[in-house]
Image 1 (cartoon, one colour):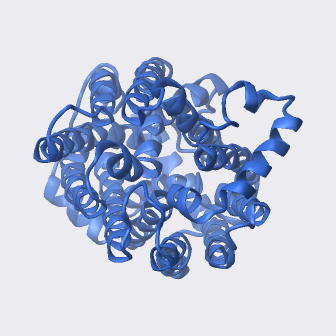
Image 2 (cartoon, helix red, strand yellow):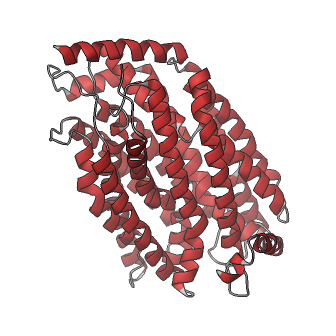
Image 3 (cartoon, helix red, strand yellow):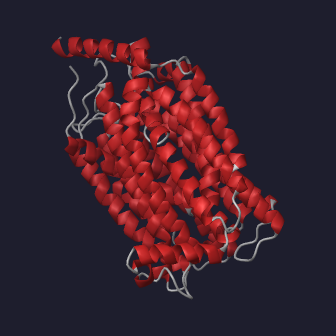
Length: 482
């Protein structure tokens, strides 16, 4: 019988992803805007930077997966990497959002150096962390529960970034967004280091490879390439994060340049009354307030709270119908909700709120925790079929799809902004505004459609999950008793 996992361990494990997301979510949501509007480089240059740095990170991923699979310590294979990388991750994350007093070329070099280092330390931390989820438990129901808790904490971290980062930037910056980003990210990075340490101290690795298994990187890669569920999940992650890389990078521009500021102010005033004047006390309403950024933040807070509701439904639905069915169906609905953003008029703030709430609810049900739980299933599938386990390389291989997806998505977001004639911190032309609307809605949705179609060919269904779990548990019990 697979060992049950305490809520203490589930929470401790989940804090590790909260830590990573203090930096990861900021990269996805705010870094393009930071580079163009605060740091002072062009959208095209930022897009090229994302492509180069994230591809570099993707190249580093399989190396890190192979290293972590071959790490042997008294703490296990994967936990020590979370400890070793905690402080470097926090320091480099802080430096990546610091604006030096350099000229244009100096700033560009600084941005490349810090972002490349950030991608490297992210791989060194996140590959072992992701692989850890595959060795904490082999029980499918417990795994679904673990990932549900994990992504509730991810969502709480996302609320901090999407809801409070911009108000914090404005508060600490006193008119200098560059200074505001530096202080805000300093706070988030300190929290990240603390959370990583908690994850290290509260988790345990329970699934270990057969001690007689020979270490062979060539065989590990050969097993991966013969593993059809892995190949499909690699492509799905690639497409999923192209979608996120494009859409999340552009949403702030949608609020800042397209939506009507008078209508956004009206919404903030209504919310201020409902919150007993809290927004006014925080300086989120007034002549010097960032109305677009604050509206963006408040809508993100509400939408992330709705995401948590979706996450609570994800586990029971996956247990009943299987992860793939729920994931695939949810993606098709997310495509619809994302695409409808193209019809939003500048004054339609309420419609923007409603669509974003519906999108995030469905994203919580389908796409927050389930693809990551399916990664762990793919590692089990490889062990089940090949009698060899290489958890780190399996997760690294799929996270390459994530990194390459973000690289392509970020590059496309910056490049498309440039193609449509974007100029920072000025009123945009009608052509540019049309481009911002398309980049927010139609363009990213195309990639999500392809990902949902690919899941039709994913062969690990509910019955396969049960069969794998039972047979692998029997093998592991036999191994433990010998």
